[in-house]
Length: 195
Image (cartoon, rainbow, N blue to C red; front, side, top):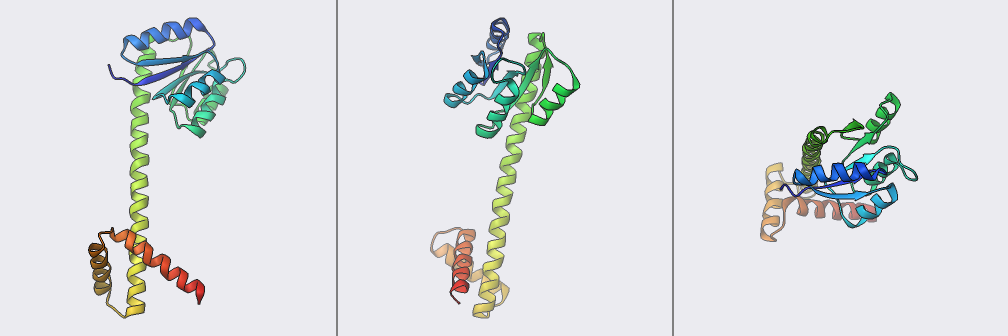
């Protein structure tokens, strides 16, 4: 069993039952909801790894549920629909759907789509994490460069001497170089505001 949780949302109880049993047999944990409001209440308690949403349901439809998921939980989703018109497909793509399947869906097709969507979602999360790490590294590098520049101008040091002074201060205080640099930059900004 892979232990991943799939949320099935469809107003057709037969679809929920048959697809739910197929997913459970494939090793997934399955949560079901028969309407959009119920799906959101469920997602407030549990965060599924992927949601399979019926596009057209009475009350809150699948597109509205997808928007809520994007805004609150970043849950990846695929759409199921009895309609294959281009407008519905384009709307699904615009909402960020990982895939769009036309009913009736056979279980092997759904399983293959779910595996692909989960893999794409994992790749997407990894890219977002790398982007965040890069942004933090760049911010740290900018702060270090700015702090070195400040030391050069205020203490008349060479670039190498200023960097070494900053590095030794960070080491002796058991702090990260980027954190020390940011503290120095903030202090310099406050001094400039007082001048």
